[in-house]
Image (cartoon, rainbow, N blue to C red; front, side, top):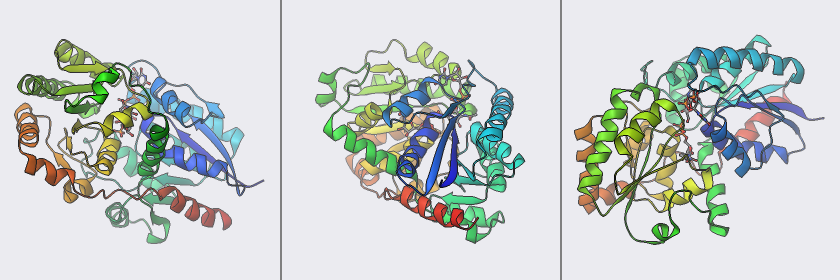
Length: 376
Ligand code: UD1
Ligand code: UDP
């Protein structure tokens, strides 16, 4: 039997970004793959698993409504511990910076099982933004044995924290691999988009796509972002504002209260990945606090305005595809208006290159993984 690799993940973005690696390793006779989900997210995770035809070998099903950080961490560590006692993998792979990632890294460490960290080295250097992700990823770094950094800059962050260069591999971000798989699936068979009429997709009205879910924006941040979107919807009546609303109750309450009755705002449920990618392809501008979308949108030449005060993805800002606008109402309204009214400003952002990868991150990760596993 080949070396045993366990993937442990729990949320939508981890599933999207690990799917290409799982699919590639499943067809590689050198390895035996085991997939364990904490299901920190339930339906949003299942949407992704279904699209990529991934059936978990173990499902810990920990999600509770409006769960606290301590609840996720303690439940996930205890349940992953039980999983590792039985599965005894040669290595555990985790992705990103959710609480599942930290819990899986710690539980693996307690069993002296090496951890490979995909998307290692992202930093804002602000422990409360994003919260709790900055500390989740810093702690995961110091537990991990292999670090798959998406860019040179993320590698430099790790080196500065004392990680040996021989353990860091710059691979690009697997989100681009996932996006290219999705784009190909869509081209053959365009999926319907729940809540959005087909006539609208084939029409010409410009679309502004919105997502948001960061804990540090709960409360005042979300109120102010929603007020900005409301003001923009009144100013740009010929535009459609489409917002797939995250299932976190702290997001849904202000979004439905403030944006629920505007004629050109469509609030829809979280979209499955293929419909979401199809919608991105038809979108003029994205307003988001999401990490993954900052990396994906530049591939399609869509400008992204990030409604946060910090970003761990400065490469996008430097290359010109991404702008940080914060959560303050007038800043959001001013920047969006400029881009929708001034074509030169818009084109400058839309034509910049994507710094996050070439769709070959999976291949590079597997190459380094094979080398490592061959030597243990
Ligand atoms: C989590 C991650 C965040 C990641 C984000 C991606 C943590 C602490 N947060 O944030 O890093 O960027 O996912 O979306 O790891 N819910 C459902 N069904 C679902 C998913 C969520 O009902 O499929 C609701 C539940 O009430 C749940 C709540 O949303 O308790 C919050 O989920 P949680 O995973 O704690 O945080 P997110 O805000 O989703
Ligand atoms: N996404 C999706 N459906 C949606 C919104 C986002 O499939 O309704 C995808 C998006 O393309 C990206 C990922 O989910 O790949 C980002 O997840 P999220 O914003 O929840 O988390 P983050 O990247 O901020 O951790």
